[in-house]
Length: 419
Image 1 (cartoon, rainbow, N blue to C red):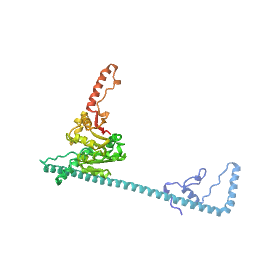
Image 2: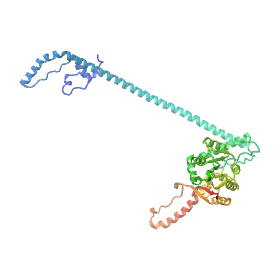
Image 3: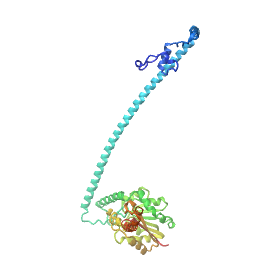
Image 4: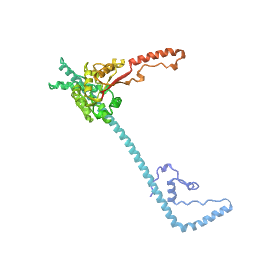
């Protein structure tokens, strides 16, 4: 009826003493007791009286046991059945435990195998992506070289694109040739990559442009804002998020396509032609961020005067550009973009504003260099008092040099058309 006891050869035989005092908890010992129907011995007592009690118990035992044999047998069988059931439960638990351990082991091995497979798969994908990047880079290089040969001796007459101005669109008098179309797309790709690497993330650009929101909110009669050289559309998206109507123009078809995919109103065109074709006094604001440094001499004054014409009384013109008052910007950072033409001095730009009729005109110094990039300052607290006068003079000289070398990276000029 019962399964064989595991590890029987290693177990000692049960004894009745195991059930006296503190009973054993071994289920197999209890099975031995009930299967063999082993009677418990009558314990002896000391002395003459004790021996009489033992003799009396032995005499009465058959008289008590015989009438209860039927009940005793049923209890014994019940106990055996219960023990067998418990044994089966225990055996099933061990089987399930082994199965669980096996499944866990299999699952762990399977996961490891899947991870190894995925690692190998991703490695293959990375290799293919690297190969495609190299091929695309080589293709672009070959395309650029071929275009240089085709265009040799031909004046390009292009104005840079992107966050600044874009390549000037071809004259409407003659359709664009296939070579010109490819050359234009190739140049736009190069400038787009330049902006992606060095212009800054969209979040950074939005944070910088948000400085101008107080000037653009509450424009007369809710008139729209025109963004000249809208690039990737950071300013237009910021205006839209603040309930300000805006539209943009850029000569880069790729930039305009990016803006339209974001639901922004933009068009491909030359910023001067669009500005000149805008009805007089129809705009609430004209903005242009990092465009004027791309323009040739003489074009900037024309842009300011065209903007004055297109603005309604109370409208604002905002132009932002790198700050040439910083030697680091003028001598190093400015020329990172090869399409820059010339820096714009803030005082000459202010004069253009004033001569065009803007009043008042305000200059905003933007993006100071971090303290880690600037010249260190001597801490007077670390020096003995007798050295403080000399250290103070050195610090004053440091301040003048630091302002000349670093200062602010950009500046913005804000002019309002009198109303």
